[in-house]
Image (cartoon, rainbow, N blue to C red):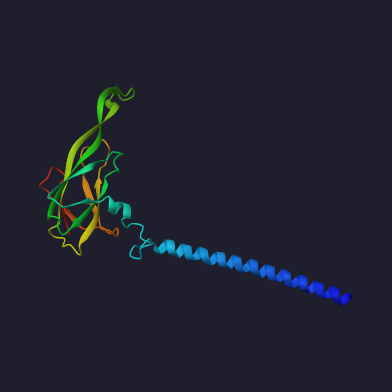
Length: 203
């Protein structure tokens, strides 16, 4: 009787260990699958795309890029519509792009429709403040000169950022340029356009 009990106990223990081993195996298998999924998501469906590059232009940016295929391009989008930081767009340069391209666009800015005067009760100084603002739209443009920047390959995507200090200012005071990897492009501003200059030579 004791022998049967011992055999039964050993059989139960073996089944228990087998069940735990199976659970451990399934858990390890699930972990390996998760690691493989993370590796695939990191490398992406296209091995030429580096998903570790946070500053690189996305596929959406490239799809919306403005193709520079004429000396003068008109942008359909209104810049600074959402405020002073809404001045970025992407351009696509190819072998058919002229050395100098002027990009025209509409610019939204805020203007004061009614100004009120007030006096400081302590100092007696008179000041003015805006009672209410209104949105206005005006035409503006930027000219880009590629003469000093040879095209490497069939095309080049460039992110353009126009700098505006305030939504109430007309025009932009500066522009910056970055390549497809997010690195800055050296540029010099021409002085033949307006006060701040709207012509930029890329190097």
